[in-house]
Length: 255
Image 1 (cartoon, rainbow, N blue to C red):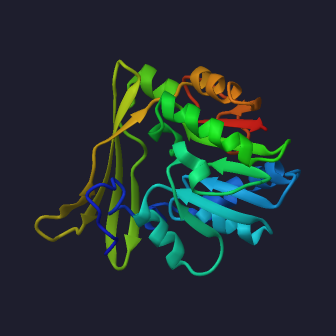
Image 2: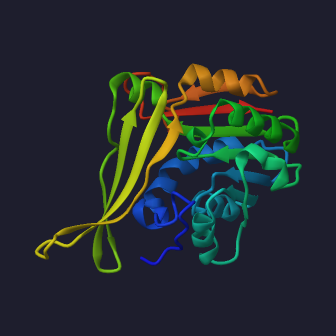
């Protein structure tokens, strides 16, 4: 596992391509993505916080012209390693107009990218995104259900164990919810070698402070910048949203 290392990049040594079961995830989310983007006014799409680019590549294969934007050069390097396809651009979401030029026919931000934006940054992000989109463009935001995390003081997400180049890799996502609505996120990768001493070794671990966006806060932010919130779901299979039980908050809006 020889990912680029940058002390200023909290995700420099995390390979989400290896740590997430992407084929199963894409298969699960594909019907909803096809439905949401079917009426997009242009085939040009933005994948915001694209990470290692799996969603962007899926949508490119579906016939869209996708530009992926992420602040982590390490994640983008992994995205580009997969070969020709979408354009991948390093950029700050709060200064999106400096990274890409419109117009686009839709935008997605899937995963947990938006909690890296605090209120002022979120306002700049949405204000910068709106003029890049054609009227009627669908926008799909998916993040963890922070109502549940903050209210129930959830301290971890499900464990992920993967085989990687002959080794077992354990991906921990530890959470420390705080009274001010922030969450200290500790993405941690372990190398697990049963029978070897020591059997577990920390490969990478970081402290990342996130904004725990509650549903009402996220809807208000989106609606304040020229977007109309159409529906809110609890997952990428159009599940109903419940503050106490839904794993995710998925907001479908339109420019």
